[in-house]
Length: 104
Image (cartoon, rainbow, N blue to C red; front, side, top):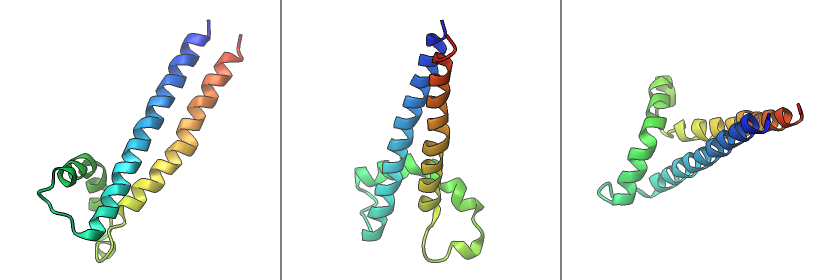
């Protein structure tokens, strides 16, 4: 009967993986379009800002002032954090679900 919790944990891991992939691409696209000075009235640009600001702003607020001059490194921090979560958390959840199956 351990297949139910195993499948649940596997499903949660898969959903988190997809969500992290979406966030990764949104942050990456936002960082890339910032290099070309996009039109702030563009609907796509507005969507990217609304979707990524809740993730990027807390990091920007925590960065020391000497990091705020020049290049915005908050997307780099978010992307590295996503890579860590995918490597550690998602993999651990999948491994745990497989381990639960082996308890039969």
